[in-house]
Each structure stands twice: as C-alpha cells, then as structure tokens.
Image (cartoon, rainbow, N blue to C red; front, side, top):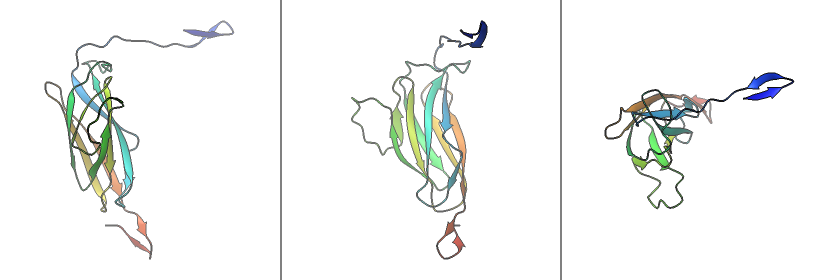
Length: 140
C-alpha cells in the first residue's frame, strides 16, 4: 500500500496461483489489416481456475489458425531454447509465450486456438479488415 499526504494512493494485491487449469490468449490488438503483412502479437498465458497466472507453468501448447492467417513465429523468452521460431507449437517459459499471427490477403475473421494436455483450451478471434491498395482498389 502506498500513501500520499496521509491518504492511500495505491494498493497492490499478490495472489498465489493454484494448479494450472487453462490456456489464455491475449492479443495486442484484435483488428489487423488484411494485407498479407500486418501482425498481431498474442501472449499465451497459463492460469489457474480463478484466472491467476501460474508463473511456473511450462507446458507445450499446440496452436492452430483458421481464417486465412498464418503463424509467423513463436517464442517463449527462454534464451536457452534453440527451437525454430516458425512452428505450430511452443513450450511456455515462466508461464508465458508469444505467438505472432500474420494476416492473409483477405478480409474476414481469424481464429487462433491453443491447446495443451490436461488444460482447458483457449481461443481468440481477430478481424482482418479490408485495406486500400495502390490504384484505388481494396483487398478482398
């Protein structure tokens, strides 16, 4: 608890995590340009049944994208990990990993799904939007 002028100005609560229960996906943004280049950076986190992040969870998470996008890369921040960045799975490190989703060249819904043994799977929906292309047209 922090005080300023004798009044409480900020508090912070720390909770101990229980056993890992589910995979949570959190995108940096949910709308991307359907130009074949735009990216969404999605954090993969393991949480307990109360939604508290499990900081020591390091399961292998399998990834799948539907809707005209691709996985551009994955990483977990572990400097001793020598696995390829371009694959459809990632082992979490300290309870987190990163998935980079690259938009396709068409507008529409994109779904990223993540699953791991003994954990409830997670998914998110991204929207690829039409973009104006040189010459006055728009992407499909």
